[in-house]
Every structure is written in C-alpha cells, then in structure tokens.
Image (cartoon, rainbow, N blue to C red):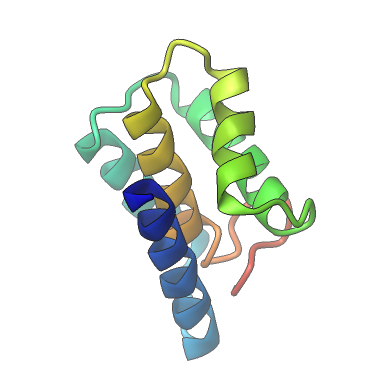
Length: 110
C-alpha cells in the first residue's frame, strides 16, 4: 500500500509541476532524472535508462495505465530489478522526466 501511495504522490507532484507552466529545458530535466535514478541506486547505460523512462511515460500518459500496471510492466521488462527500485524508477520518471515533457510520448506537463 505504501508503494501505491508513493507513486500516487509522485504522479500528483508531476501534474502540479506540469501545471506550473515553467518546465526546464530537456537537458536539465534529463540530468535531474538521471541524478535521481542514480541516487536510488539504479545504474546502467544512459540510453537504456532513458528508453525505459520513455516506456514508463508512455504507459502513464498515452497508455493510460495506472501506477501499479506501469510498475508491473517495467518489472517485466527488467526482471532482475527489485520491486523497490522499480517503484522508485517509475516515480522518478513521473515526477521529473515525464513532467518536463522530454519523453517520446510528449510528456504530461511540458
């Protein structure tokens, strides 16, 4: 239940950032996202991390998937990732990357 609340909070935060009308440029958003992901202990090739973030954003935005299904899809694509890291990745993508509109889906708020 706590995981759902955390993702829900991140999604609400992403919507609030998007409504503020002052998105950062794509380079800053990408740097912020990569820093947050790294702080969560998630590492890998940057292009692959950004591709995963794009897929998460698509699921949340165009796919109209809820947070739980988005995490489940992400874990299916990354079976070795622990649940906690998957939740953190989805929350980071929703809060920073997706809200700035830097993903392939066009973003939620940018």
